[in-house]
Length: 246
Image (cartoon, rainbow, N blue to C red; front, side, top):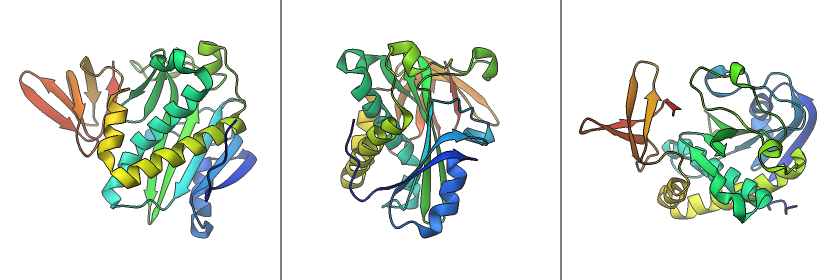
């Protein structure tokens, strides 16, 4: 379905505890960007240590590499990853459904308004790990989600398209390599513009919940560092990290 990008390695496992954990174990020995892929995970995790359920047929992988540029740019790779995911999914569902895909700040991909994919970044020493999970054939039910969280969907259920997880890895690896090259060549400004073009609920009222406060306001923008900008009562709120609720 896709060519494998030059200079990028891959490790494929039938069963593993976590692709993120394995990426950390492999880090000292990798020569270049390496995708760690598993058909099954027994201890997968999402943001803030939450468990990530991995039914058979869904996709889970981690890219580990030494990113170019300043350390503060590492967090911006969540936007690179989101765009690469959208590109890979676009290639499956076709241009007629491209508008059904949108990007939810800071690290989710939505299909028909439901969460189809999530991204987890972990930075350690010189390495960045980009963990990605995609609901290809199954998704969590509403009662398994945090109250108020965006509902989940899966690719097969929403579109009728079924793709083997390892084939999806090839699509995603190629898309990520292209988006990473764009990022390192042109900086965050081009990535930011591409992400905003597909941003979910841009211009609408949303709620950002941090560990200490909750802010409801109009989603105005993301700034030049990737922080979300909300407006409420004639005041702008620039928020570096939060959970977003619609």
